[in-house]
Amino acid sequence: MHNSISSAPWAPVAAPSPFAALGLIAPLVAALSAKGYTEPSPIQAQAVPPLLTGRDLLGCAQTGTGKTAAFALPILQRLHAAPKPRTPFAPRVLVLTPTRELAAQIGQSFSDYGQHLKLRHAVIFGGVGQHPQVKALRAGCDILVATPGRLLDLHQQGYLKLGQLEVFVLDEADRMLDMGFIHDVRRIIALLPAKRQTLFFSATLPDPILELSRVLLTDPVKVEVTPQATTAERVDQKVCFVERTQKLPLLVHLLNQHLDQLTLVFIRTKHGANKLATQLERHGLPTAAIHGNKSQNARTRALEDFRAGKLRVLVATDIAARGLDIKGVGLVVNFDLPDEPESYVHRIGRTARAGADGVAIALCDVEDRTALHQIQRLIRQQLEPMTEHEWHSASTQQAVESRHYHPTTSSRPASNQGRSSQQRGGGRSRSPRAGGRQFARR
Ligand code: AMP
Image 1 (cartoon, rainbow, N blue to C red):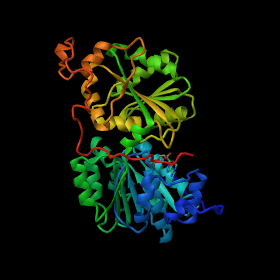
Image 2 (image 1 turned 135 degrees about the horizontal axis):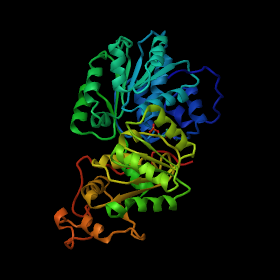
Image 3 (image 1 turned 60 degrees about the vertical axis):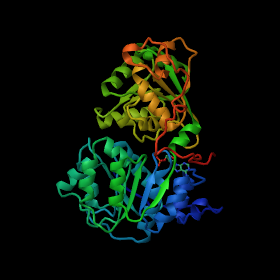
Image 4 (image 1 turned 30 degrees about the vertical axis):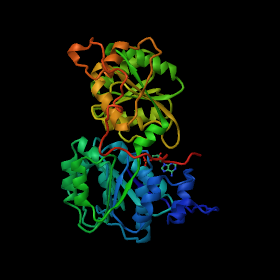
């Protein structure tokens, strides 16, 4: 839970590093080169210099863009440059993030990037005993990474003092809203000192989030990176039109076709996730389900087994999979399509990360029709239909593509078949700009 970052000497860096050119100090540059990073991602290039000067930031970016390093590096550097004795229960930096997994990953990033600095971080989240977390807070930490519920809980018990906070990072603000954490977030914000540096990250900016950012930020630098463009560029996105009852055999077929690849399957409900995992196991595919009802231990074990290649398939709900950094996911299957089109972008962002290519396949039945249209409008792209398989349902395709489809008249021939939602003039005001890859290929 709590991690002391060691002060091991670092190897001198021979060639001038593009990270040093951003103003980062040698211990950080050395840690980055140890991780094999050669070039800053766009968000890092844009955010690091102003953050080093203490500016506030509004970052429109999702996980997978390198945003963790974009905020962690300047934070580490500024704390290192102005050392202070650690006070029990009073961190200098708070990073608030919606899920346990993200909190753990961010903690790990501080540990990796700060390996040559004498700074200490702690990670607190719910679902596990609080004792080791309280112990870490009592010992004193410079950086605290937390989920909202546990943070408030420990604060109420008197284990947290936020009066000395210098930097506040709100990560995945739109997810906080989706997951119903926004009130907790507001309560936490009320506890923070007015004088501080604030970094605000959100993949999308719906109105309540934009409003919150206005309240929180003072003259922020705005940085926008375009996950949708990345998605369009690197993920091969396909759709299978299929009867609902045929989704399972089709999925088994797809998994057998991609036997050499780790696959994430997304599904809407927790119950559905459990059921599907059991069914896939019966078909001889080592599978685990992760969702909010699983214990933290079960989720961690499933992730470890998946990362280690012991599991072929992970069936996940949106909340459980949010932000997971799983290397080597080659295929993402949307067993059903998410109600919110933004979730689709988050889901398929699990593949094709950091320069690797990936495939995303959506299984679309008649009920998924509206969701598919919304997704295609958001990403400004048509998913490529996969029809060369025995579960292809031409009538489903017809119904989905028909402009005049109504559930009670599904057999009616489509009058506007083939016209894409793009052609029909779909498009959002906050639509993505075209943009480049997030990472240099190595
Ligand atoms: P994040 O968006 O912070 O979740 O980062 C996504 C992934 O990209 C993580 O696995 C990072 O370790 C990796 N990453 C971050 N910055 C870079 C970089 N400059 N070059 C290559 N990989 C990176």
